[in-house]
Image 1 (tube, rainbow, N blue to C red):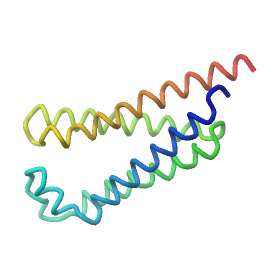
Image 2: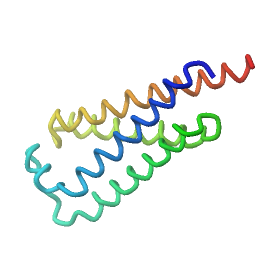
Image 3: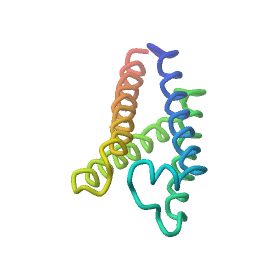
Image 4: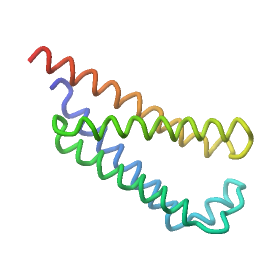
Length: 130
């Protein structure tokens, strides 16, 4: 596959992004909410459920980094998840519920989604040529 090392690193960085962000929010959610000017939720259960799922997505990206050919469905789910995060962050920023700095995390996810889509197209093109 063309640019194999690049794609392996892309998915490894994607995994690290998910693990870093979720780990940080999991242990320091209350101060981080305060830092961006949001009231912490009365119960963090739904936040932590989301964080657990995002962490698991990171495991999927790590698996892709280890086997680019064997995990296209993980990549497709990752694209859907990252686009959903972007759409929700953008929506809640536009209606004034979250600050711009928090919405930017959704932009990072959108960039990953675009790069993951590019990977799938490159993979498909390579399979037709090889």
